[in-house]
Image 1: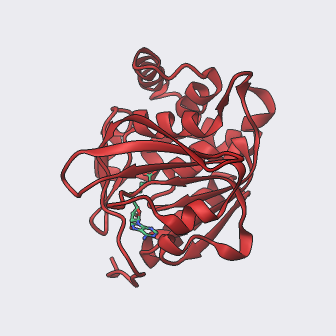
Image 2: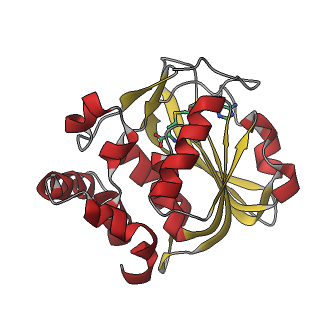
Image 3: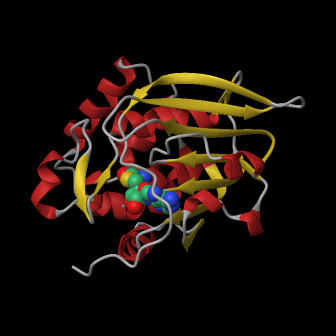
Length: 236
Ligand code: SAH
């Protein structure tokens, strides 16, 4: 995929080829599950997911499952990350390049890393402070430089930077957050899982049209809850 990957390529090479086959298998599995955009599959193959999880779990990093990352949070399942990325970027003519995207729920930054090369500037908000500072360091060391971080409650969005071309939410609110809809530009998309904790959550793509909003259901997912307010978190 050429230029899109140059940012993190050296680090990716530096970790050796030990898991190349495992990564190919993961990408192949996602393709079978319906991820059809080759550039997204290639990005999933190239992002070193083992660097986003605790060392003790690194042997499981290329399984298609969510894993714990501390502070009671999880790293999302690769399939869901790919699905949400595709939902933001796909177009009749392939992938659209987005200028300004807001992400809510930075966590360990895996979704951030997958999305970053497709976007000119990515803005990400996390409510738990220690997660955010670790992730800032991690993404920097991977050579991903087009991300701005904010410690805040994502329900507020990032009014100073709105409107956004798209907004992606990686924690589940009980209802669609109105403030985020307001921060979408024309044609902008909000991709968000909605529903109760531990219950069935639906993944929605809501597109701002000239006359209002168009809502599509993309499937069932399971995310940690989107919580109000921000936290200092417990040190580790
Ligand atoms: N995107 C991550 C997964 C994040 S898990 C990945 O790629 O693996 C969900 C994250 O959302 C957690 O870190 C949680 O602290 C955060 N979160 C929950 N409610 C939030 C809110 N209101 N604002 C910002 N972040 C929130």
